[in-house]
Image 1: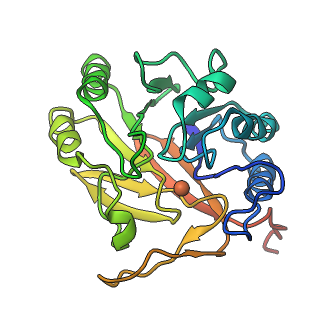
Image 2 (image 1 turned 45 degrees about the vertical axis):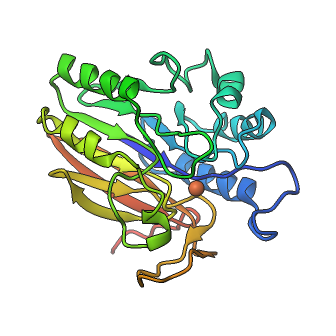
Length: 264
Ligand SMILES: [Fe+2]
C-alpha cells in the first residue's frame, strides 16, 4: 500500500506580497502543511505539482522550502508555468526534493513499494500553457517501456478540458502526442495534474485522471463558453492518493484538521 499526498499551486511570493492584494499564499501553505502533518496516517510522500513560486525567483523557493521542511515526510517539487527551472535548481537541486533528472528538464521517477510515479516537466517558459517536447516524451516512453509495473503520471498542465474556458485554453498544448504515446503502454493507472486550482476528476485516454486544488485561491467554477477567468476565496485543499491492491483511491481534503468524534 502506498499513501501519498499532492499539493499544488502554492504560488508563494515575497513576505507581505499578497496575490491580488488579498491572498496570503504563505499562510495558506502553512495551514495545509499543518493539516497534512495532522493526518492520522501520515503519507509516505508529498508531491508538489507546480506553480510553487509565483514568479520563479530563488527567494520564493527559499520561502517554499522553509515550509516544506516542516513536513513529517519527504516532499518532491515539480514545475508549473509560474515556475522557473533555474530558481528551482538553485534551491532544491541536489536534495531529495528534486531527484535525478532527465537532461535539461525537471523530470524524475519515484519508486514506491507497489507503485512507480513519473513526474513530468510541462513548463514552456514564456507561455501559460504547457508543452512536452520530444526529449521529454522520449524520456517518458523509455521509463514506461523499461518498467512494466503500475505507474502514475504527475504533470502540472492537464492534457484534458475541465470545462472552464480560460483554463482549457492553457492546458497541455500537445495533449494528443501524450495520448498517442500512452496508448502503447497499458500500465498507467492514473494521471494527476494541477494548474486549474480546483478538484476535478475525469477519464482521459482511458486512464483515470484528476486535478488537485490550490492550497491558496481557487479558480471560479464558471463553465459558460464566454466566461471570463476569475478567482475565488473558496477553501484551499490537497489530495490524498491511496494505492492499495492495484487500485487508486483519491480523497479531497479541505480546511484545518477537524475534531473527530467516534460514534457511540
Ligand atoms: Fe496556478
